[in-house]
Image (cartoon, rainbow, N blue to C red):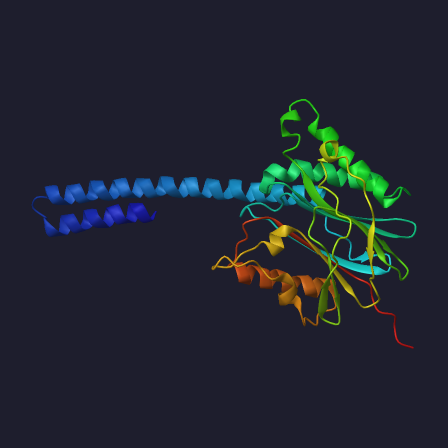
Length: 308
């Protein structure tokens, strides 16, 4: 409509200026040029609207895939409270190669946080495979070392499928798998090449260093690992922070890594949702709004006993 009005106005101006000659050659050239520009803009608008609709559909499918592959953690895991955040590196993606899941057992909660080698949508299938294996086996009463060995075999078996053998030794998943007891007691953990968890007590973060590190999942046929369990205290009122390297390897404009423990020192948030909301905002502000790698963050709280 705007293009048609512009052409009509230009024609009217030509007629007013040259009533005897109707339209001069100069005005005819201007009208033709305006018609070409108008047609080009109409075509551009049609293509843009079509692309916007396609992008909206892709986002809808991506969000649906995330809810299926990586559903949100429940707010309560027995006596524990939990929350999780996922930040995908690809601007139009809602899911990538980072993963987390929780499962209830008879005596506590089993939790996994992992990171597939690579990022974005190419790593989604590997993340979905590991999450499916974890959900299938985490409810069993097997020991933590047996569970991790099963997860490693599941990843290795997938890489040995026809068409996937070329990825053997090149694709792996770092992960931390842990048992958190319902009653007060230490957390039992096996870390497979993953960043160590952090426990916050009264605003003071403590990194739980791993004494018996295991190789990443998917390298079992190459490394033949023996899984040994580490443990650390997790008292009432503590917050347990789990994360992927997309958090600690995020860089600011000068190239400096995000100093996670320094940034969270002194934070007074006790609620997992509030803590992760602040951490997400602080991380994005630090990097200038866009991460270069997928990042996942999980916070678990053991609520303090109510005062008598």
